Amino acid sequence: MIPDFPNPEETDKIEFFTEDVDFQIKDEVGIQQWISEVIEIERFQLTKLSFIFCSDEYLHEINLKHLNHDTYTDIITFPYSEVNIEGDIFISIDRVKENAKQFETSFENEFCRVVIHGVLHLCGYGDKTPAEKASMRSKEDDCLALRKQSFIA
Image (cartoon, rainbow, N blue to C red; front, side, top):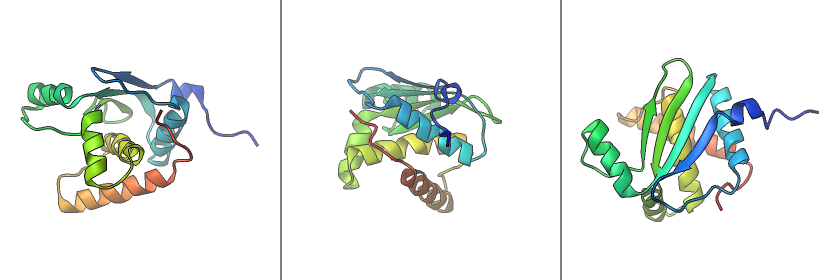
């Protein structure tokens, strides 16, 4: 049987960058496959997706400049299409570390939750109301259950 992944055409559409943090994904292809699988399950077409891993301060500046929010956050998602999955997802590695401690989970689990949270936003899931938050959390849990290996160095 020929496996569905890796599909170079899909994994090449997901890129990872860092800004002002020392952070590395040990298995880029694995996490690209996982993200692609989630997008496929959600019945969306992947166009281009960039993840930018950064510090609290870097993301705070983006939050101020582009959203006029003077708060720290773990993630900001910028969608560029309403039809396909195309966007930039900025993730504060500092905030993910703090959240992992606060929620008593591993850094990797919290990291993967935040990564897929951004992808789910691009798939149309919201998190503004209590009902949306519950739906988002349930969907995140479903997506986390699809992971087959560790991605973090």
